[in-house]
Image (cartoon, rainbow, N blue to C red):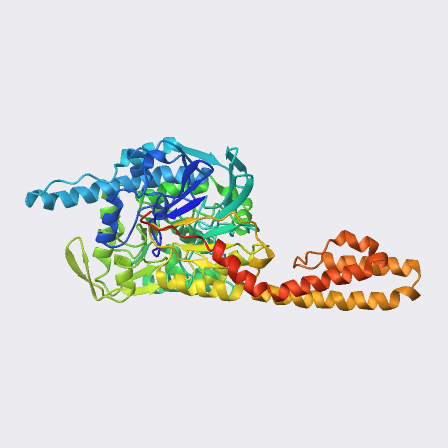
Amino acid sequence: MNITFCGAAKEVTGSNHLVEAAGKKFLVDCGLIQGRVAEEERNAEPFIYNPKEIDFMLLTHAHIDHSGRIPKLIKEGFKGAIYATKPTCELSRIMLADSGHIQEAETEWKNRKRKREGKTLLEPLYTSKEGEESLKHFIPVSYMDIIEIDENIRVRFNDAGHMLGSAIIEVWITENGKTTKIVFSGDLGNNDIKLLQPPSPITTADYVVMESTYGDRLHMKYKGDEKAEKFLDIVSTTLRRGGNVVIPSFAVGRTQEILYELNAIKERKNEPEINAKYKELMNATVYVDSPLAITATEIFKRNLELFDDEAQERIKRGDNPLEFDGLKFTKTVEESVALNENTKPCIIMSASGMCDAGRIKHHLKHNLWNPLNTILFVGYQAPNTLGRRIVEGEKVVKIFGEEIAVNAQIEYIEGYSGHADQEWLMNFIYSFRDKPKKVFLVHGEERAQKVLKEKIEKDIEVSTIIPEFGDTYRIDEVVRKISELTPKDIERLRNRDLEFVDKVAKFNDDISILSSDVEDNILNEGKEALVNSDITTGVDIEKLANILDRIKVFEAEIKNIIEISKNQKELQTQEKNKVENIKEDKSE
């Protein structure tokens, strides 16, 4: 059983993992690499596996950095099924088509220059039509249903709380009569995110492949409605001074969360105190200028049952949490362009969230230069993106080949991220009843991964690996042995056993003077003490039924376990050398 990391290795984007097991080859995600031009050009490179040999795919969610190379995979010969939740299937249809449109537009722009230079013209990675047609491979599944891929592979999708339809995927693989469970976290949601349910806890796993986007930091912790109030104050202050608020926002997820936030305040317009405090906001028009966001919002509305409890309460009261007075969707290019001529202060939400594509670039060009305006960032900005350069304080940025002065007020509100921070990433590992044998960290910048790796190994004592691109690991199916326990576990075991020996000795001293009824009570206490122990001692609890006759034998067995445990550190080191994920030599 092998796992190869074909993307999102020491970087955030391009998620793509290959599993070879039980006579099958399957992928988990196949996303676009995003960032600098040189990085995005890697999308056109051949896959490091043969797409024709892939039997099926599991898709954690619809974001393009997880799904965006699926059409390319199909063009190159993949013919299998793609399993995903129903909302992910719905969202992927529009997101892959939109991604194809962007591929076509960017290729056309590049070819204009190449044509002038007499160079060979490029082909788009895939077209909008190819993006949409890839949905023929999708098979929708429901949360919590166990899907039998075949007699040896079963999978289950659990709510990851990251975006509508996002999933933590459990995979059970049986080889040679032994079953190994691998958990792919996908992107784990921020527990403080509005609208969606928090990530589902997963309690068992042999191996975990986990995202690490915010492995080195904690999100800002807000009390009560502090985050919403900060957002509303920035918006109101800008509108009051006559400026526009431009919000670069991911079309799927972040846009809907901001609409939810605005709905909450707009629905209170009849409260005099609130109306007075946010007068300008109450009267301002909110434009969603992204065809993708508009369609995605409709998909959200069709899946209200997946919203969190607070949203469900609003729905019961007759309030659609994604609608309010003054909300307008600009569908056409003409409507979008007309916003640049708008003289009345307004709020404009547009994609893409990192400002590298889409209509947001036009709005930045027309609003960045004006000090009355505010550019409000509410999401992660990857390195080398236009959004990252603006957030980091560049005074001049180039948009459509033109240098634009950054005079507008730049704001960034933490806490709107759809990704778990370090605390919640650690909680995800803590949720396992038994420690996984290995954790593989993906989907993160190397610095964040190193910090998280150190914390997992120190606090939870689970061996953690940061794979390189193309690394293949052989998954060892050896059942977890006592020799694999950590030194801390062994010390706890030793202390527990010494306590048992003392108890047994006391039983032996007192046993002759006790009535049979009292003897039975003590036996039950001893049995309960062992049952409640969370460290396996190797003692057969059934022997307690004959403790009166075999007290000395029982004591000898416990002493023997103590003696064994004293040598566990050496045995553990030897065992680790056997099962330490024998890393394949790439040259083999």
